[in-house]
Length: 127
Image 1 (cartoon, rainbow, N blue to C red):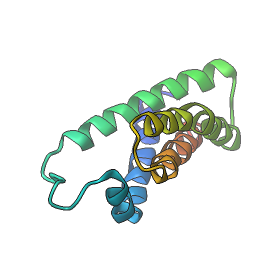
Image 2 (cartoon, helix red, strand yellow):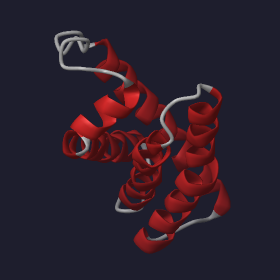
Image 3 (spheres, rainbow, N blue to C red):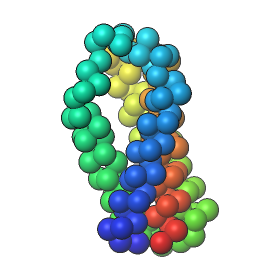
C-alpha cells in the first residue's frame, strides 16, 4: 500500500460520489435548499477540495489498515465500511441535525462516506 494505492482508492471513492450525487442530485438539491440557478457548476473549488479531502481519508485509512494488520480485499472493504458507518456517517448526522437541515440529508450524505470508505478499504488492499 503506497501513494499509488492511496490515489487509486481516493479516485474510486470520488468517482462513486460523482455517480451517487448524480443519481440523487435533484432530491439532494431540494433537501439542501439549492436550485440549478443557485449552483455554480463552473466553479472547480468544490471538486478540487472534495478530491483533496478524499485523498486525506484514503491516506489515513491506509495508515489505519496497515497499523491494524488488515490484509485482503474483503477485510479492507469491511474495515472501510466500518469506518464509514461508525465514524464518518455519525458526524454527517450530527451536522445535519445541528444545522437543522432536512433529515433526508442524513441518508443522502451519510451513504457517501459509508460506501466511499468501503471502496477505499477495498482498493487499498488490491495493491
